[in-house]
Image (cartoon, rainbow, N blue to C red; front, side, top):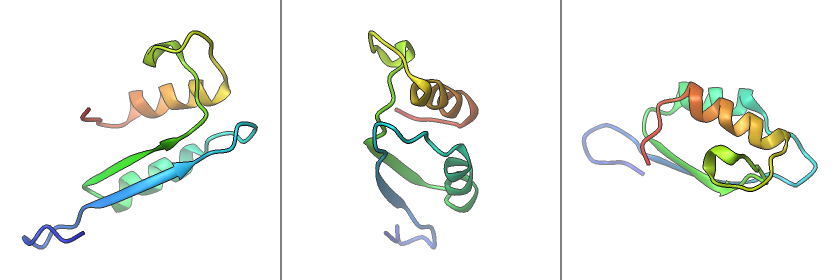
Length: 73
């Protein structure tokens, strides 16, 4: 999406299957190449940090992503 002032805005929708670990490098690449973006989807990540009762490995990775990147929610 072109915002009209020579800047672009990207929207990503992701699905990560339940038994596949999230790829931290993917998130780093998106953050490096795209200045303005929204990333959403079903990551099959469970972590208490976002209100889940249980946790899993993808949840731990999501915590790392949340802590390492500048997020606006």
